[in-house]
Length: 286
Ligand SMILES: [Zn+2]
Image (cartoon, rainbow, N blue to C red; front, side, top):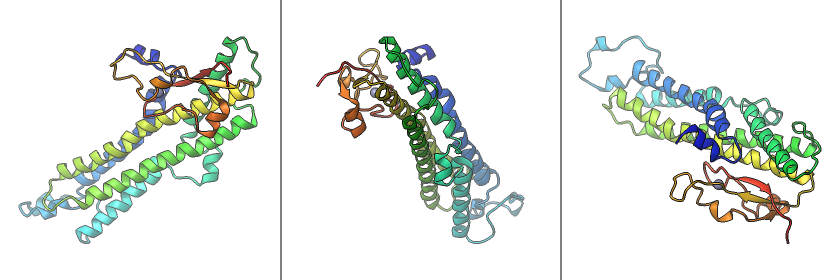
């Protein structure tokens, strides 16, 4: 798919932000963790896996950073603590809740951008209908400020879950590395665990949290400007295209009150990973 097609297929206009700004901010951290694991396990043999291979000569054991000279279980436990430390500090940058709410976490900038895009989208939608819009400055109302704080914590928790899942999976894989495994295989299995947990979740977070933030501030602006109902709008290309939103297509054109969105009884984008749907101003009904 071309970049142009991607942009055209994302009604919120945030595809490039999600893919090229927020996603890389998360994925570079998990890739850094993968690189550190590879060096630790393969280059440094800090788990001393090579010692399990009887056919290695003593001179093959080179100076390395290691996890001590205890038995393998001790080193694996040390590896696990190291991986958790890397994930918690290097990837997540763990912070107390109050500081996350105040916007001090690295994700705060991305949350703010996604939420601001939603504000601007809603302001444009209102103006296109000839309405005058008040409070166009970023997060100019108490409601939007509170929404932003809530979104910051939500994004932080999502990244926290991703790092927890990653270290949990590393522990599981580590416990299953048999005696005699090659360092390459060990490093491959451990880095694959990062691919299949942290990196996959990072991409999902960039999309889902951007879309969720976008929807929440869109609703705020509509509500503050007296719009009674909005329409979930699923824009898709051709049928059979892999980019179609099958969960969302049936909702296209449906109208729900903002109260229903607030109550969680109306379909609120994102409904699924990589959902690109937005809420347009709907016609009042009921
Ligand atoms: Zn969708």
